[in-house]
Image 1: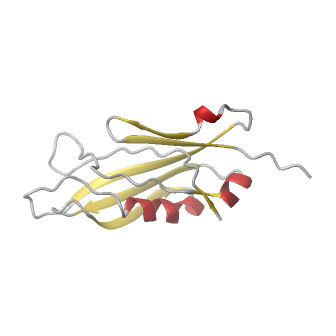
Image 2: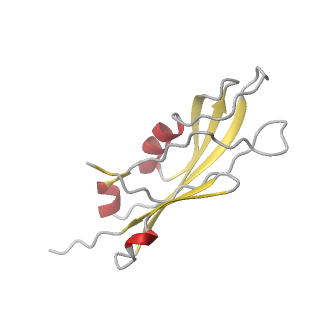
Length: 132
């Protein structure tokens, strides 16, 4: 079962031949699997996206990070849309998803999704205390 709670997602983009990285016009955040929250799995997932001139993500390549969180990160990144361009070549965009678990005592308003320029999205979830 997936929890819709989003943890931490950081995005840093670089585009070939451009001064500033393209910013997504549609951003989809992954759901944090409940089992990952319960087992306290957190960390980074770094991906490289190949973006077509139509703005759609054509390929996703895992670069580094926490393997158990890679698949859900890749699935979310495939749904991102970037601005269209007249260039026919693919643009490369580097994306880092940062999954962070807050202490179980954290306030509810500390959870959620936070977007910062340029292309940094943070998603936070509270740890679940499991008591026998």
